[in-house]
Amino acid sequence: MYSVGSSRVMFAMFRICFLLIPLVSAFNLFSQNTYKIEYHHGIVEGFNKQFVDFFKFAYNKYNRTARAFDLKIRFSKKIETMKVLLEAFKFINNQYRSFIPINMVFDVCSAIKSDLFGMKELMTKSGNFTSCPIQKDSYVMEKFTPDETQFPPNIPLGQYKFSLSFTTNDKFLMKFTVASEVKNRKDV
Ligand SMILES: *[C@@H]1O[C@H](CO)[C@@H](O)[C@H](O)[C@H]1NC(C)=O
Ligand SMILES: *[C@@H]1O[C@H](CO)[C@@H](O)[C@H](O)[C@H]1NC(C)=O
Image (cartoon, rainbow, N blue to C red; front, side, top):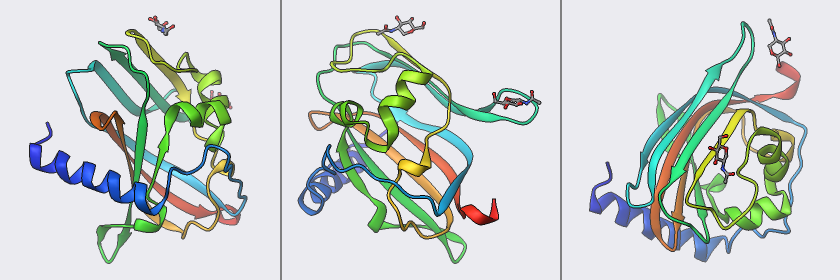
């Protein structure tokens, strides 16, 4: 799914992010209560068959009124470390444009350990991806909704796409995108 060219660009971006934002520190926890995120859908963008033989991610309806994310992945190899690049695209003048202030790279294993973005709680509540190293096995997360009160403050309101690209030792693992709207808490 990925051409060599686009993965080169991606890894160049990884390096740039590393220089600018030296790993959102595992000790740097966030909190905010001004915005709420309304999720619209989740899309799998691709995965690397060298490491992953099944990957499913979606924002599903599970009863008449409630929706939540479901994720299922099967790794074909043991993975010791995993980093994620979060890229934001904001809908401005009828187009999604790269919104660099929100972009960040962090280490998934330390983020779980330190509960960055409430990840540990989210992962423990919703499934069995709770620690590293990642085994040659399947992992599931069911009916989960991230807790935005543990996200960074001051994200401008509006429509966004958030892409998360996962890598291990600079090699692409998988990527998904979430379309959503950041709304004023008072308006929801
Ligand atoms: C749907 O699920 C949510 C969360 O579990 C629950 O709060 C709500 O009452 C349910 N709605 C219906 C119509 O079953
Ligand atoms: C996680 O749960 C799935 C589904 O129950 C199971 O097949 C898998 O072996 C579990 N993975 C681990 C690492 O425990």
